[in-house]
Structures are given as structure tokens and as C-alpha cells.
Amino acid sequence: MSAILNDLHHFAATILLAVGALLPIVDPLGGAPIYLALTAGLTSEERTRVAKAAQVTPMESSRYLAEILGSPVYLKCENLQRTGSYKIRGAYNLLSQLTPEERARGVVAASAGNHAQGVAVAAKSLGIKARIYMPLGVALPKLAATRSHGAEVVLHGHNVDEALAEAKRYADESGAVFVHPFDDVDVVAGQGTVGLEILEQVPDVEKAMVASGIILIKYWLEVGPDEQTRRIEGRIHDPRKVWKLSDMDLKSYSRWYDYSRARDAMFAATDSPWAPWHIAHTNSKKRGRLNIISHLLSQVPYEPLPKKDVKLPRRQRPGDYQEKDHSPRYIPAPF
Image 1: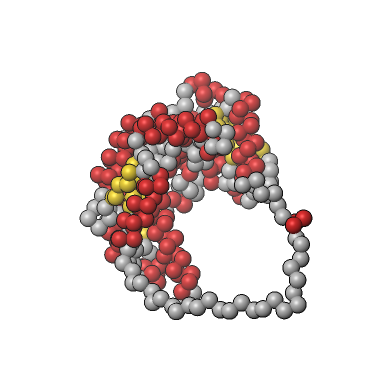
Image 2: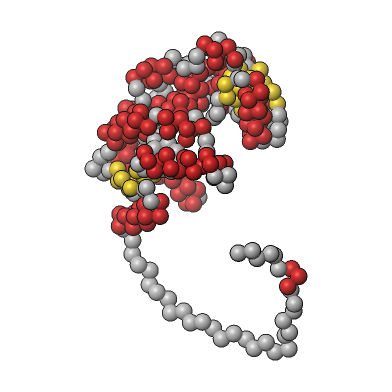
């Protein structure tokens, strides 16, 4: 039971971190300098747009869980959304910005349930034709709900990955706009409105986490524009790295200064004495990682473990054992 409660404690902390602009480490890598900084950097226009499809859900405290965990616990009730989850936010934020020509082509997505319903509801409210690919064996209530929202449902594949691949193929073939469940800037920004609501409804959310004993350390991994260009061009031209390139990388590159403003807004909204942001220069990945590890160790209290006196035991004598020739089984060694 104690192990389960411990996992629940970490899970609750992870959820609070992941839904807002509170990720412990934001890594620009070779692509977006900001992913979840969009959460705090959303404009009032974007928030107004999402509000047309998603309601502001309440934050409810749980006395039962608080007593078990020994710290305040708040639950963001996104199950009260029309689709039963927060996915309507991202889907509507993207679809509502499509041009008339894009809307005429329709949209396509793939999901096992929540994203499917979000896209279906958003498309119906905007008068856009939607096709949703769902894997064989999908939960019948989710299948029925998606169809009830007016989407054309196509069952394909044995898992979401196979359904996603087919949806992408259909988008390339038909010209329909592909709505990725997470690898899209506007989808991420729409989902991020959950984080803004949490910050407004429970402004001391990070303070409560720290007070409960969680060590909250937030790093911003800074990459300069020239280095970002070098990394993305490396992915484009190197066949060994091109698989790492995503549409989100390219969008983030073109919107560098939008993201920079969003980063500044995130710092203003979430930097505090009890959970400050730490910035690490990572134009050099190796030096950046070593500096982060060094700084992280300096922030976490720990006691050195007593060193054990370990001695290498004497190896047994071979006796009558004769080494066999296993060379035919050796793999090629070109390196």
C-alpha cells in the first residue's frame, strides 16, 4: 500500500507539472525553444478562442487524498468537459484557425478515444467534415461517442500507431488537414489553457508542492538562434537524423520570437522564491548537460553512503575445463 501511495504522490506532482507551464526541464533540443512556455504565453485572443468550445472546469480539493499523502491535493475536473477530457481544447484551437480553403478540404485524425471526440466536436461546431481513424478493438463507448458527434469513423490497425500512419497517408493523398494529437504547436497551446486555469484557480500550486516535501527544480535549456538553425539543418540533410525532424520543429523555427515572448511570460508567471527558474546554456549539449547535473546535485540535499570494503575474490582454478572454439558464433566486428 505504501508503494502505491508513493507512486500516487509522484503521479499527482507530475500531472500538476505537465499540464501547465511548470515542466521541471524544458528542452529546446534542435527544434522548439518553447513547448509548454506557450501555456503562460497564450494571448487573450487564443484563450477567448478556446473558451468557445471548452468551459473553465473547477479545481476541487480532496480531503481523502490529502490525508493519505499528507499534503493538499487538488483535482482539475476536465472530465466535466463535453467530451470528457481536455482534448477538445487543442483540437478547437487548431481547427478554428484553419483558412476557408483548408476547412473545405476537411480534417483527419487518429485516436483511441479522447482526441477523436475532441476533433469530432470541434469539427462539427465549425462545420468541417472530419474523418477519424480508430484502431480495431477500440472501446465501444468511445467509438459510439465519436460517431455521435458527426465524424466519419474508420477502423484501422491494431493500435494507435497504425491508425496514425493510415490517417497521415489519407491526409497526404486527399489534402485533408491532419490533426496530430500532440505534435502540433496549436494543439499544445490549446491544451495549455488548462495550466493557465490552474495557475489562476490555485496560484500557490507550486508553493503547496514544495511545502509537501517535493523538491521542485525547474531548468530552462537555452539554445541560440544560430545553433537552432545548425541543428535543424543537420536533421534535414543528414539521413541518420531526419527521422527526428517533426512539423513542430519547423513551426517553432519560424515563430522564434513568438516563443521568446512566451518564454518571458512563463518566467513572469511561474518564477518564485520557492521554485525559481534556472537557465542553462546548451549550445554545447555536452557542457550543458554536465553543468545541469552539477547544479542539480548542488540543489538536492544528500548524505554520502558509507563505503563498503569490497575485495575481489580469488578466481577458481580451471581444473579439467578446456575452452571451446566459439568463433563461428561471433558477430561481425567492423568497428
